[in-house]
Image (cartoon, rainbow, N blue to C red; front, side):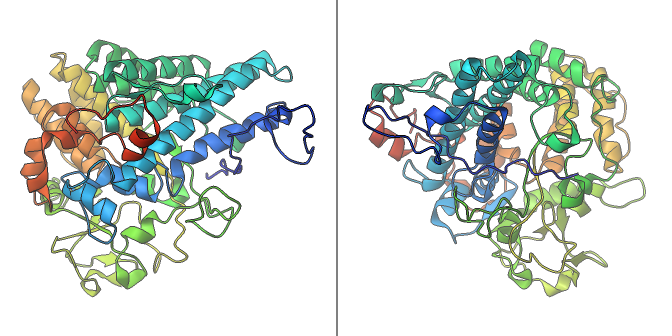
Amino acid sequence: MKRILYTSLLVLGLSACTKDLEQVNPNTIVETNFWKTEADFMSGLAATYKVFHDVNNGYFGVRGIETINGRGDDFFIRNDVKDLYQLSTFTNNATTGTPGSIFTGFYTGIFRSNQIIEKAAAATALSDEAKKQYVAEAQFLRGLNYFFAVINFGSVPIITKVPVQRSEYFVAQSPEADVWAQVVSDLQAAAAGLPTVYPTSSVGRATKGAALGMLGKAYVYQKNWTEAEKIFKQLAQLSGAPQAPFTYDLVANFEDNFQKGSDNNVESLFEIQNQNVGGSQPWAGENANEALGVTTAQEFAPTEVAGWFEVSPTDKLFNEFKKEKTPANDFDARMYATLVWDYPGAMYYNKPFKDFKLVFGYSSLIRKYQNWHDNNEGIYISEINEKVLRYADILLLYAETLTMQGRTNEAYPLVNRIRTRGKLAPLAAGFSASQMINEIRHQRMLEFFREGQRFYDLKRWGILEQEIKNSDKVGKEFFTAKHAYFPIPQGELNTNPNITQNAPW
């Protein structure tokens, strides 16, 4: 069930008047008359959540989705938008705009989280329980922003207090290990203070399961297998069934994760809430005209159905899906939910596949996250939630964690849960650790296409360069080791005298 969460367009960069003769208009919001009531804190949280789907700076807004997927070996972005094409073809530099925008988005979310944490502690109108929960929720959001910042930029500034003096805005970056330590600290605190479930009116807010899941993932990225296993044990049994008190499970139909009618389902640990509410302009930014849906599906759709055909899956992904068929000699069920291609009876937006032109020379088009059961992309404001963390991710990360500790046999039931939903046969017995890791890598490529995971998986596995080069991706010849991270944006270098460019940029 979809719930409206991001109803506030409040910008929380509030400041108080400091001169005795200045009067505060009681009909406007300033810091001296805000942060008083529960409604104030709910507005503050709403404004913090919504940064993630902001059209300009949001990590899960249209430009963010293009940025985090576009560099993978499974994804191509055409040359319509210069910055995005530079990212997809590894010709970007510190002046390329889109990474700079998401960098701004991270620190907007961090600033707003810091405000909530500080103001909640001093709010006399809040109960101790309410304070605890608001602080934990803000710590989750801050930890999530730092998680995405560190996997994209590596060494970045750590800011955990609202700046008071001008000089406090200019913070040098910390080593990557210290940023990971901040992620872990925030997510641990969030897990300790967040509820397991909310009333239906608050569906979409961060829960204990979301915090634990992201914490386990953070440990995996740091190759801290022992701590990762401790976390995953709290979420899933070795059989792949949920671990009480959590009730997460795989939905029977893979495609239900990517349709607006089945958002916030049993597989979801955390997702970004998108809805066609608010203003009428999805490109408006943070003001009253802003729509709370996104244009991503419209940008990815072909021109035949009112789309802008900005992207395409590569044939490397298409061929990866074809490597193994089901016992009934059909394709993996996830392939039909992820892609459309020339097979008998193939339909796309209620048209035969043959009515569409493959303008980039690849073999398929994207179904996943598209409103492809409709006739077209309509008014260009998609309501499909972006899934930040799914139970399928927990199962495969758990399997990887066990395999990396030499316990391959324990990984079997976890991986087989994923395979079974795809209608694939269970794995044969006797896999070595390297065979199981290869299977997990294969499954993650199929399972998480278009979910902003592929590039970062390849990087943490240490095989990014070889897989980019071993692909049919346009621009692969320009990839070098430095492209594993974005450079610190030039705008930040120009305004912050204490920050320097990350090596080797």
